[in-house]
Length: 140
Image (cartoon, rainbow, N blue to C red; front, side, top):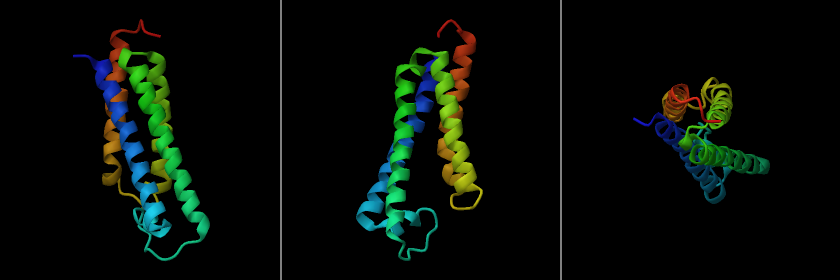
């Protein structure tokens, strides 16, 4: 069993999930308005100030960017069992997930169940990538 590739797939799926989520949020915010875009997080749909659409678009951009970086590191580094790639993706994803927990799950805007796929993909990437690096630590 190739644990490095399973770890890369986990991180890659995390990246794709976040790119797709960002696209969904951005599309909704642009075509349906920011109030509908924020409805994903429990907003009641009432009118919001103009800047909220820009903030939501910026959030989507950062979400897509983080997903793209993690996906790129997974494809380029984790796939070949790079310890540096494992460290980069584990730290990057952990920090993004920490923000998700602190700012969306704890206040109740997003349920743990709704966030579960990202956590599962993160665990898959970190655990399988860690096993691969432990079994063959010769990769830099």
